[in-house]
Image (tube, rainbow, N blue to C red; front, side):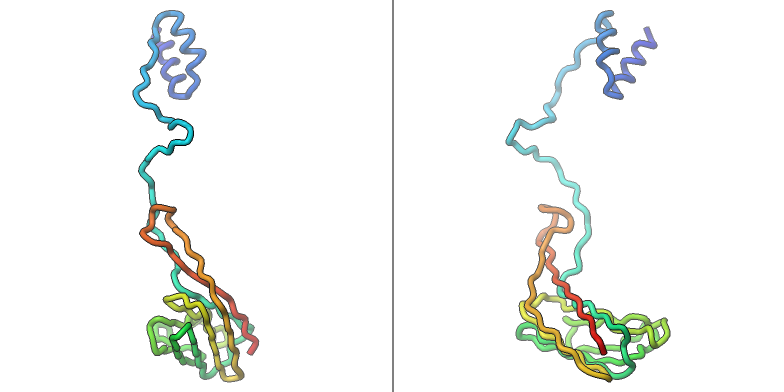
Length: 183
């Protein structure tokens, strides 16, 4: 009798209780369980369950990824016109020692990404330009020791909820482009 009860309990746990329950019911050892709570909502109704939300966020703002086959050594100027705002940055390659910025800008709303401070000078570069706010219209002019390039764009931001709809207090918005420069 103890073996049958153990098999019945094991079957209940594994969801295989029908053959064991039928046999036990024949012997009068099993009572039908009572339904305590309905777990399936009627068709067309939504159950309200607590949501598990992650705590991540996205990279907000605008990013212009920069790449070139080589970045000549010398002085660089970056002029950014973002809607009615004008930003100016200047810097130099090769980069100074790690921890020392190579580029200075007239506003904290813009940053120029530097790459390779621990690498040989020929492997160093400026890898991105970022703005904290996404403009609708953008003009970026980069002047280097061997030439200049201008990038114009009408931007469309993309917004989403990185932790799921209903988890974030507001949407996270960003826009990104890439610019290859042939110096």
